[in-house]
Image (tube, rainbow, N blue to C red):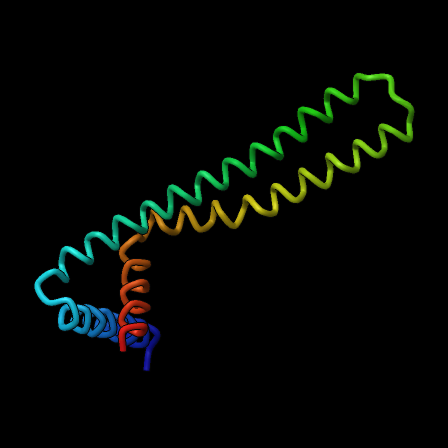
Length: 130
């Protein structure tokens, strides 16, 4: 079996799985399945916006830490005080960046392919109903 055949088979199987999920969803909710799917897709975009806001909030904390570093770098505090402030600002900046990056990753994923995440959510809904 060639790589092309394997890829085609995988895509075909995924398409059948999506079709099965949508068919089950249609059986459960009847005529409202198309509307429900549209709502689920829009909800994924809302989740993307929500994750983008979280990213900007955490990234804002990192920028704040950088600005405070510049401010305290100009002051004439004792070296022990500066060391403590620098350590706290460094912890804040590192924590903020490590929290921000996953939110950005998730936001981009929701914006690029909301249909995929809508299908995953529909699958979760169907599994909870059964």
